[in-house]
Image (cartoon, rainbow, N blue to C red; front, side, top):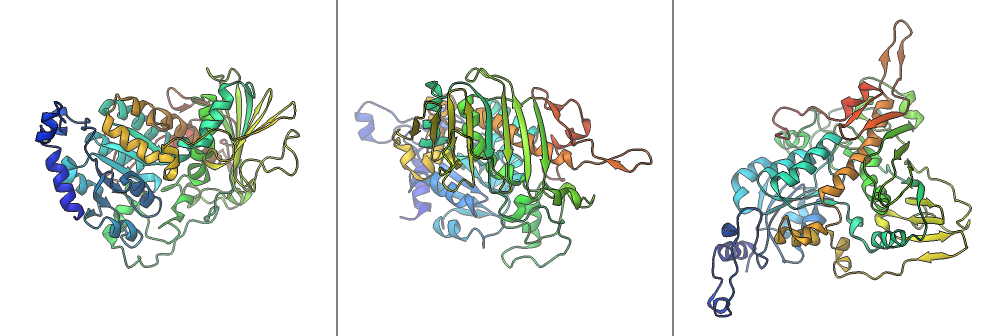
Length: 492
């Protein structure tokens, strides 16, 4: 049976009030979606899934959500079907689109849920459009490109009562759950400092914005490239943008922090129950500073950065917290409590985190992997918890947990138990992007009389989280919310 036949049968079955005579004889009914109303799906139904941006990470997102045929994949959308060849072949019967807006216009009534795995600058416009149609959404990390967008998506999830999940799969891992278990037992006591670091970027950063205009790939047209640019200011195609290196350019990506922050800051954010930071300060790689040029500095991320965020005490952690982030391969040194020959963070120490507590130190790697505790009495703890049924699945069942919650509904316990619904991942993303706000403010230069330009952004920035505003340097607030190109908006 091909997928179209399967989809048609599924569509017919979900519109049948009494599924079959056997079900009727057994004395129960399976209520179809159109009877239950938007946002409610009979538990026995398969979801009709659409994937947007299905090359690269998007391939595993839609494939894991499909879960070996547990759901239907009815539509795929991408602007480069050469890059997205694998899912196009696997889901051959799914209808293919280049423009998500056309897909929603034509198939909106038959799509239940959407995975969104485009470059960062298109996450929010697509997710908002889907939620406004009542579609459940799974959005790759970081949730959004800007702080304002993260706040708007978090609020929209409640307004439209849709099930949401961000694609930081480590949030669902057994390593992360082990870290929470240890901390909640009081093993390391309250924490006053967190160190988080990564070896990213592993793509070009801190280089001049490209000005050459090479030919498009044979798999893309000018119209496709215009769709790829989407909400960003228009720039001609360059291989330093597509398919992967867009991460290093502010119009499209969010740098090393955006790429890895939602994976590495997440364990600390989750374990300590953090909310909005109150202040942020940074320094960046000197290539970025020395080569400052008004034509490209607003567009390029630095080769390395060092960021410090401060958080007030939380219900889980009754201590003010200093969080120190570093990227570009710069990592903290071994604390005396950790033996010289032990790695810090993950094996090899290239990425990781350390929570410095009053009784000891908790360490972890990307996705919360390799959790360990070093106590002041000399005790060392390693992982002992067992994996759940979902955690045994690819990417710890992060996508499958979402699809199950989609079927159960917005008010369900399945939705409330998701590890990265927008209620959690929205504030987490805002924290990650607060680091980027400081980095971008660091490059701002302001004319000062006849003495040339000064860099007033190179100072501690004070943040009013409730109102999404830097209170001591107004020029920094330009990075809270961006302006969209014509034809794209959040619609709020």
